[in-house]
Length: 116
Image (cartoon, rainbow, N blue to C red; front, side, top):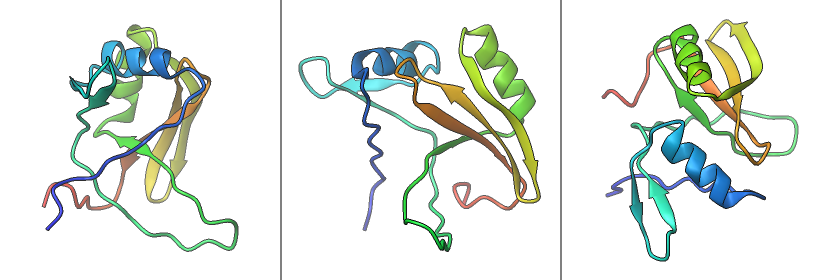
């Protein structure tokens, strides 16, 4: 039925963030016209969590080894904007995009659905 998912990052510095995704994170892309890049992401999964607060969405890039991933990103000039937080269900950190937006990096401790 569905063939994929499409994620949109709204940015105050869209060109710089696109360059970052291409040049620093190494995501392949297609040009949808006039330089408008759409990036290929790794396989995805979605989870629904309860909240007592305002409903919202979050985006995390998943990895198998967060220390190794952050070290490689740091070597590529990526700013690590929040250190690793060790939680029962996973390990989280954040990297900074040129626009100042933070993007989550996540090493799950639970089974992952994207490998099904």
